[in-house]
Length: 204
Image (cartoon, helix red, strand yellow):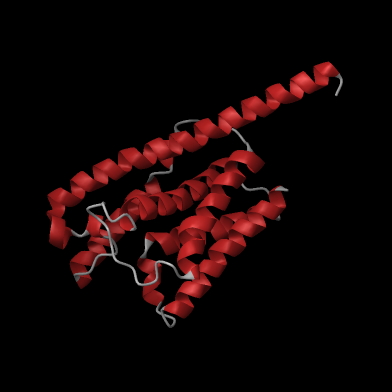
């Protein structure tokens, strides 16, 4: 079962990237987006985990980044009531569905239901390393080319103070999301273990 879900996650992420490249006529510039980078990460980690052991904290990190992609897209970028709403002509295209919905859901289900391996809570802070590195990358690149991948990191519009405020909010939110993944994983694991003990005691 674990192999099936990991393969499905990898295929979903890879297919989404391929379809996105086809949609943009091979524009390599799509790789500046966190969506695409996180999809590459979850695809590689899931594919490797399907054939050989990968540390739980590594799989947890990849899962968090994929969940960040789905959460930010649906809560902010695709939400008309959000101050960061972006009109996307490809909102209903297959690549969008795969990258922003299917892959994050598969990643979360795999982590919570299939893997169920313990990870210490402080990894939620360690996992923030990549999102913070991406923020630095987006700001440095934006200062050079005067173009930013997302409105909440657009220093030209928000100013660096505005970006800093947004970044602090996102950092807290992503840390809490990481804790949620770790906590829910522990809860599911405890419930299933309790169920197994009850069934063993009943001789089922």
